[in-house]
Length: 330
Ligand code: FAD
Ligand code: EPU
Image (cartoon, rainbow, N blue to C red; front, side):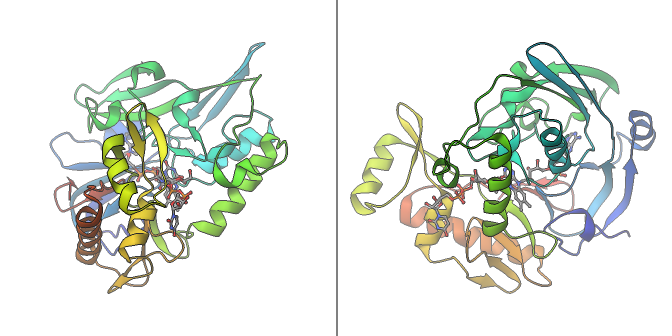
């Protein structure tokens, strides 16, 4: 059985029936069998194979980038198997600005709309004109406009009505030529009139300082989403925890950093066998050696339990957890 260890950034020792890399729609259609349990993979930076997966893993390597511009916009079509950060860097080299806040996010371009990747005040949905995909049931191509993708915080139609139903083959981005850099988030807000390139470099610097590099320490980025709570609930919490941070979401909802909640429960830096809650960013769980899927689940559940008991907030995993048959929920 082939090993999946190098195919997902958490790097648990897991196997599957077979791994097939495809670099075109035709080679995908040749490899895809609807009667066989299948997991479509990009860079594996948001997927954790907890143990052996009883099915086929199809790895997207569809490449190709084309560009044209109009008076007001750059239009860039990108093969779903292109590397996200390499694409952002190419945009910077060509002075196609807008994506600089999303530098250094691991993974493929094709996965970027699935959870509507976001960082440092920007989410990708703002730049997606349309997405080209194949409907797995009929093998027919289709195009969906960004406006129809129901994008939300770490969310899109690909996690709901189109969940497990489509292969994304290409993402068509539109970047306006007239734009303003977004320098609202923490470390960026203190910069003095930054250019897009300044933001790009700063984001890389901050990310390198805060987040463990999966090539050196297995991880899948934030393990949990930042929870959204009602203002009433937040005000109750604030009476006891006066320093609890929050970001406004709507008139009566706020987002609370899960890292802060986990930090307060005392899990920061703690390990369960070879799975550790990262010492500088407790929202990230890491593989510090030969981690086992069972330990990852156990530590994640302990954290969820502690946060729920202390704050009455249920954390939801951000990562895709893959078990023997396919995706599982905690
Ligand atoms: P994979 O894990 O390969 O796939 C993710 C999901 O998408 C799976 O369900 C898979 O089946 C599906 N999928 C993948 N490709 C396709 C396709 N072509 N068609 C249909 N379905 C597909 N995320 C953020 O939003 N912001 C961050 O700042 C951020 N920082 C991170 C930092 C680190 C160190 C790490 C390890 C991860 C981070 N992430 C972040 C999470 C991750 O990088 C993103 O979710 C990324 O978009 C995942 O891309 P991938 O190709 O690796 O996805
Ligand atoms: N914090 C603590 N203790 C710590 C670290 C952080 O209390 O040890 C608190 C602080 O209050 C800090 C807050 O957590 O201000 C937020 O931390 P950070 O700025 O590192 O961001 P985050 O909310 O933990 C989110 C995303 C990241 C994204 C960054 C930057 C989610 C789930 N995570 O993290 O995305 O890169 O913001 O925008 O939304 C990912 O999705 O995998 C990911 C890494």
